[in-house]
Image (cartoon, rainbow, N blue to C red):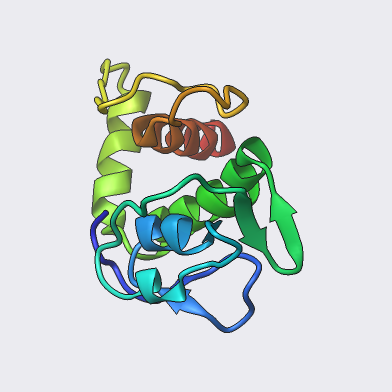
Length: 136
């Protein structure tokens, strides 16, 4: 939800968004349309029932959209907009054996569960686990 700026919009070469949430909401197809105006600012929920998410010329269902749009944008933001010292802090604590807990409003950590929102904390934990695995 926080505006970090300059986040590439997956499936839209050259287009950037201020926030990951703005990408997610802006690419929802509601009433046959996307809403690129959501790429500016914090991003917030759109009303209406989405038919899917636009990815280039394809309309993606929720699980594929999470993988190709949300995960890609979120991880780009983590790698390029979050202070590297913060990521290093989490990784360092993991290698020291410290238990770390990341909380969210949702507890769905399974990207393949289309019936619940995908927890943002799960995306962060999966990213950190891959960073740790790459250094082990």
